[in-house]
Image 1: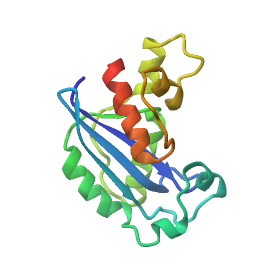
Image 2 (image 1 turned 180 degrees about the vertical axis):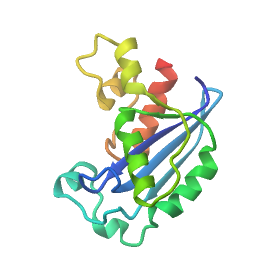
Image 3 (image 1 turned 90 degrees about the vertical axis):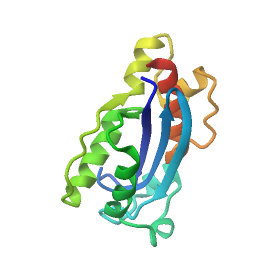
Length: 163
């Protein structure tokens, strides 16, 4: 697979629909060609301390951010029917489904692929297959882990190695 979109969500709280940021990295013919990052007003709109500790996003950061339906219009236009790739795609795909459902929007039809699962097959010797571990193994410096764009960039780099 050499043309795809790597995607990563961060959430504000325990609800999968509470996406508060999204990062996308566009890969065409094996080359990263562009990226996209947006803060999103979460639904429901509250933050758990633990989530903020992980990604650093606060209610002040998203107070003036667009709600997901506005962001989804932008994203849909960009991704079209391209396959989506995520590290631990179970999480990111469930976030996408949950937030689409929360706003009563049609579910996406894009195929999801998981770099974590594929990395387990390609690099079985690693001590774990967390994003940071696999990124380090392939020589990708993930310096801002849990920032949606940085994680999507790492995911894209991993996908280019494992698929």
